[in-house]
Length: 426
Ligand code: ADP
Ligand code: ASP
Ligand code: MG
Image (cartoon, rainbow, N blue to C red):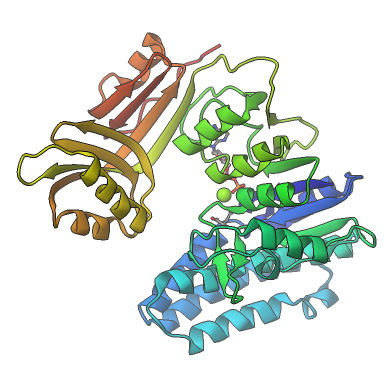
């Protein structure tokens, strides 16, 4: 069997849904289809949640009305009139509305997963119903019952053994060769919804590929495949047809949005190839990530991580930053789930670059009880793999560099302003 994953961009409109049905209809193998929330629905549900947490139920419900209108506009364009009334999408919205009207509480992370997980539930209901209407026999799965996680809300860890047991029980491809399940969501052992971290649907696809021993996993994107830089930021990007698992891990960890960083491990562990293909040009082969490739990457790869914060920690009494203090600093970092992108240490200080996030200020406050902490916000981290003097000159000249690290192959620059467009590299 194969796993196909369709992200938010691929299902953001009626045409998008029709397009993915066309892609799926050409597949002869058994297929597990993982689908994300439509378009920017997750961001919109985050706004609903923000209003709900401020106890502004009216604002939350108004935002929810907009989300509902967006989905029903798509439904109207996709289905024949008489199907609309029967769709379980109505009950999903009713459940959400009821949660907002009757719920209260201050546990942001738990409420996040409860509310935001509906984005994927709703999108899969629509996609499944459309597949059925176009005679693509399929079964809809509720991943909140199948993907078991711990209770680390908003960044839950999958219990692979129990999830495999449940998935294998729920799935056999005897009656229909297509199953549809939500990316990004699962639930803990008490059945409370959890989510796997923003952009986590790629990761769901990889987990399912691993647990069901898929022949391959394909993530369908709005780009020709993996490129040597994000085309939304840099010009003249170059397509990379083949990458090793290690290349992909490095790229994803450094912040290349095209693949969620957790996606590679479950696939590498079972040597399952990962294809990144364009949903707008399904006949193109895209990129493949696998163990052995025929030609190493021979173009510079640029990754720009935005919204970074660099903080520097110094002992109050001019003592060294030694192992004991490092272990405490990292405990605080883990406790507040900071995502570290770069570390640099000296005798009496350590500088750590992290993604800006909800709990950063609390971490800084806790660190400040024992250390002097200074920090810089609004930074970007440019990572150049395959660095050479020309490309460095092109991208770095004139920039305010706050910190840099270089090896023979890689340059990393924490800086204040965006880099200039990439020059042509061939
Ligand atoms: P999804 O629809 O699955 O959520 P994403 O929007 O998360 O997809 O990922 C696709 C986007 O990743 C592209 O639109 C592109 O702007 C961005 N991207 C960042 N780095 C790269 C890269 N190296 N190669 C291709 N795309 C990239
Ligand atoms: N819908 C979720 C998000 O936007 C998960 C995903 O799309 O991968 O983060
Ligand atoms: Mg995405």
